[in-house]
Image (cartoon, rainbow, N blue to C red; front, side, top):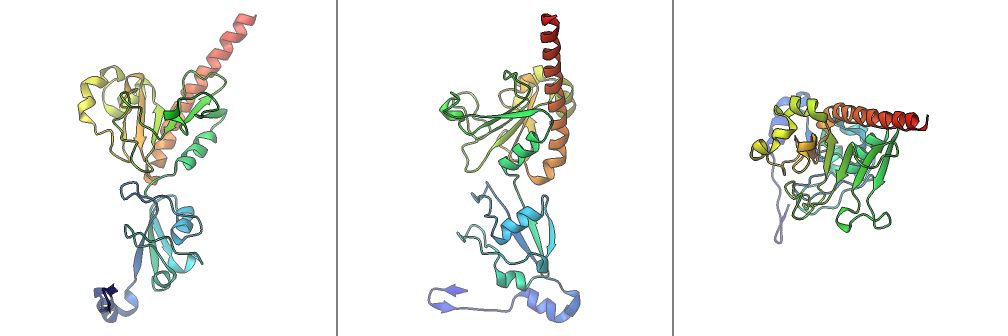
Length: 258
């Protein structure tokens, strides 16, 4: 390490233990994907962390020899990135993806049957504060999305999630009254009585929606990969509700025509 004008080196504890354990000693290095808490965005696909981000949807280990060639991530002292020397001297790498990218979640939702996405923009007349937010529907009815991915606070209305933090977004889901009560222990109409029980800015946690909980919406700020199984379960519920609404509307239209 360079300290001022002096290059210093020393023998670490691992080197001492390795000399005692021999082949029983293994070196596992850590790797980090994205971290909104540290202000670290998603890694480029060509970096070591980017390669691992693509290999692993959940935190997990990879043999260092299986990573293959890649380039070093930009170093800004919030995180010491992997480089070829580190990987060459490691037996395995433990990669923590940390956050699920908003585009990955959007693709997951769009893979459900009959889903269409509306991306808020200047061109479709959306307010500027919502540009870039995603709204997901089943069928042509655009009155009620069953899921949204939003990246902006709405001043004076929806600021509790603190979405103005760098890289932070929120997934919102229509849970329905029954699932909402099962998850949170009270019905949507009783939300205001329990509002003080929740930290709506907390990351990676299923919470009542700070503004639409009374309509049975839940939300997750920056869901991590370990949340994906639960997200898929809740998405299935929300999608089924939207599909049922669409089919009821289609039946009513058919009946009126007849």
